[in-house]
Image (cartoon, rainbow, N blue to C red; front, side, top):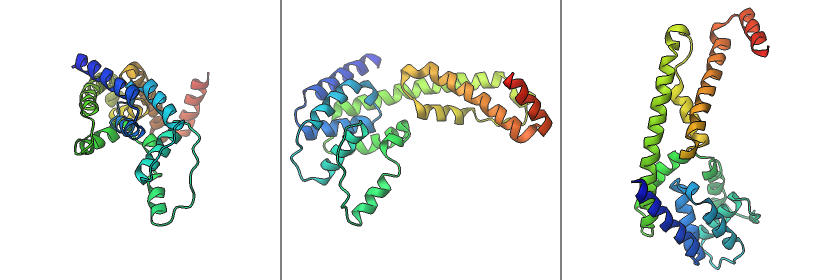
Length: 224
């Protein structure tokens, strides 16, 4: 499967480099981002956006104009925003801006979007196949990480030693997964989850268990 992924990645890179049609290029980048595989193609996407920024988009299609605006602004390009939208379009845009793609949990967004993309008439089959393989590989990696962290948490025997501490290890891992999901951050995810779990233990100790005097003594000990 990993060899197939590498082959598909090279195909997608070539598509991004060789596509001269700006509309097709935007659609490719948009699909790649929604499918959560853009971390494989950061350099190629930057090059494509440079070409897009320095070219005139000759169209009157609202979707393409909005897509160009979103892609360029999301990547730090200075693009003017019109402020003369009329209702109900203005209301729709305002609601969409509440949770933009850049603030969503990428793996959840990818899971939702992959089903939608499958039904699109103009989908790119290479990108779609890569997205499915990538999702399965990362899901397997994340499951292994969670299994390892859960065993580590169980070995601490906090349920017997500190019965007031909440069992939140899965939730905490999910928090960290929202920060970085890429495979090369595996060690960082493991460390960050463990660090945050100890912060939660302290939080529960202060909020639920310790008396005021005990908390003061604990604070002094930590500061020393």
